[in-house]
Image (cartoon, rainbow over all chains, first blue to last red; front, side, top):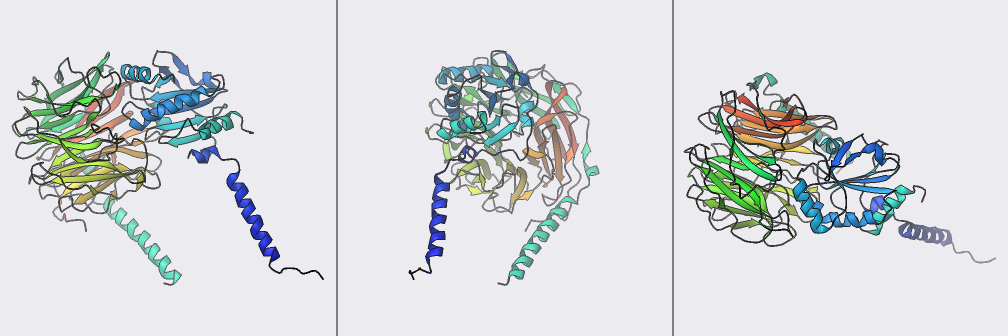
Length: 183
Length: 426
């Protein structure tokens, strides 16, 4: 009769567990988790809004349907906001504007200073002036920067309070995941 | 320790906390709030900062704010008797050659014992195209009841093209002016908290003194003085791990030296961005220091808290939550206290569809507070409060009285007498 090690089943279980843990650890990274981006507890639609850009162009929320939207709430007095702006612009440039749009939303209505800052850093992100703070209030933006991600159907997909590494591979994966949910 | 002892201990702790919270709410009914008639200051549809307000012993209201005009921002001041119906024309504080830098905070405003008016405000650093938000800090003063302001003096004594802002000021009983601000002159990632004084009614400023490093980049500093001359400065400090704590430092030698900063609430709020909310300070005649501030704590839940110190800011009482909101979050608290220890706290409560200003009052040196009372009729923000020593206070805030324009609303508050059984919080 061949010898059977009585410890074998236990060792097999242990080995399989370790392999599983290894596979889980090296599996596809959840970009939401990697960027500490929280998902809304239940599906909710962004409100209808109509805000002007720095050059006076009016952006209406209904014109954004079918695209992934990143709304970054910031202010001129917010150092961490200004620091993450170049990375946000780099992220924006990774995608086709027919699919992905980004807006820097501010209730800090200082068009002259914002223009200067934009020119200094050669930023191209459109700025939306939230003059009545209605959009900020709707999203209960209480600290800056705050970033809201909206899916192509206008549903809020993610929320981040504080700065993030927006030019990181994880951020690019995050936008791709929202663009093509099945991937 | 048996598990049931642990459970019993936890349960009794929860019950104890609840009982304390309820006791804090019950002393002063809402009807005790004696509010006067509102006065409206319109700004012609121009964007303004939050208001700065003071109320002196002659029942004169002092008001200052920053207002946008085309491409420039200017600092304005007016004073008005409390019974005056119409506001007089405001006076521009900054000279035309030195515009104001930003709308995001009110100018600092203080009144000296002889009616001198002091204002701090920031101006864009000239020709700083590479650093568009660099600023210089100025002190202006008026010796003719705000009819005109003398040429401003620069407060920061460096020439580094960077931010010198988030300023505040207080006048000590000996007339010395104490100014605090956030200063990035050392070029570090985070600014430092600085102070300077003027002992000649704002004509000259002392050498700048750094109090501490690692200051949260966009929460305004606050300074106040006690009747014994102790100076207190509060700011939000960044501790290891991006923890944001409100701290207080004190000076007992007329601002020459300051103590190490003391953490007030031990909030453990981890956040790497901009809260943009200052602490608010006050001292009563017995030397009790009151600190009111906004924080979110480890669970990111917004709250407005009060703590007191009866040992000159060396230690603080456990923090107590003042907001009782459900479905709204509290924001931007401001407080004031008179010599007797009557405390007024005013703050915002907001939800996705509402934005209100509420006031809560204590007539027993901060031991109990009245239930928060809503002040505004339409969407409102930017609360401010000032008190004199005759039991009269002035509340101010911004409100969309005539949509979509924002106006400044002023409302008097007559304070009830101090309760005699006021005692130190254990």
